[in-house]
Amino acid sequence: MPPLGAPRGTHDLLPDTATAWRWLHGVHAEAAELHGYRPIDTPVFEQTELFERGVGTGTDVVDKEMYTFSDRGGRSLTLRPEGTAGVLRAVLQANLLEEARPVRAHYAGPMFRYDRPQKGRYRQFHQVGIECIGERSPELDVEVIEVGWRFLQALGLAGVVLQVNSLGDLDDRMRYREALLAYYRPLADRLCDDCRRRLEINPLRLLDCKRDESLRDAAPVITDSLGESSAAYFAAVRGGLEAAGVAAEHNPRLVRGLDYYAHTAFEYWHSSLQGAQNSLGGGGRYDGLAEAIGFPATPGIGYAFGVERLLLVAGEQGSAPAPQPACDVVVCSLGPAEAQPAAQLARVLRAAGVRTVLDASDRKLDRKLRNADRLGARLCVIVGEDEVREGAAMVRDLGRRTQERHPAAGVVDAVTAALAAGRAA
Image (tube, rainbow, N blue to C red):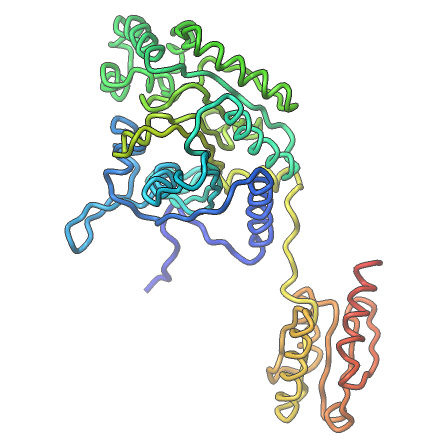
């Protein structure tokens, strides 16, 4: 029988990559919390209808990519394909807006889409993001975009380009919809099957199609359909970004195909991710989403970043931290009689904050030392028959290949001093 492997489109977080993983999540949490965003977590599955309304029928995500199943009670549930709808539901269901407006929340976790696996894209993938819920203003749009920008700066990523656009209000988008229909209808026989199906339902989705990209170049842009108030809102956002020192490019082709999106849309692109996959993350204002999922009208804006893509770029640029060693110290017993004293000494070291691994195996000492080196330990504390009899332990520096015997009561001080000296060197 062949061994079982991970499902296609998934990947394991192995110990050598865990250091960079924890680093990225810590950097994002710090950037978000510096701006007043607090952590939130939601279930990895929700009622299917939440995503049908919140992501939108007629989108590839809902029509082709969701992992949907019926539970034992016959209820239709879906593994979350994105984070915004669940966070908004949680905030409104818990009436958090009665405590403060706006609610600022940041999140991290796995998402699921049945998609073709490729570089930086998986069927189970992970995102970090923020949501600012309860108020509408250009200043809040600037704040959300700036949090993402500062986060990418803190990761040390070079080559990021911020793309921004305005989707206007509902009247603006209706005018734009008619302009797109007037342009695309005469070209219907040149569209792919998906775009012909979407044309009358949601023509803005045609702008995302890569197969019909050549037709997009001559299509109308939404900027020409903006009314005076929407244009002024977008100008305030761009002015705020400039004042914040956040460089942004106006991309009039950047749109969102659902009616509940409004005004600001943005994406963070990176030159190393080519073609359709050049976005590290992005977001926008979704002022109509709350009503779409059954709650009173509530404005909101947020972003999400793909963790795997960020780590891919950070690794290529060398800004991600190297794998962290498993421990600082390995305590080795030289025989069965010394196993318990060695275990107790390991506990004492851990209580002092020293990352310690106990090697109580029956391997010979030279093999234990080689194993300690592979674990990345700086020191090996050896407990043999003589050490037990004398109430002592041998502290061996694996880098300098020196060793010194210390009374058991002085081992912690000797170890912490040696580790501090090694860090200072």
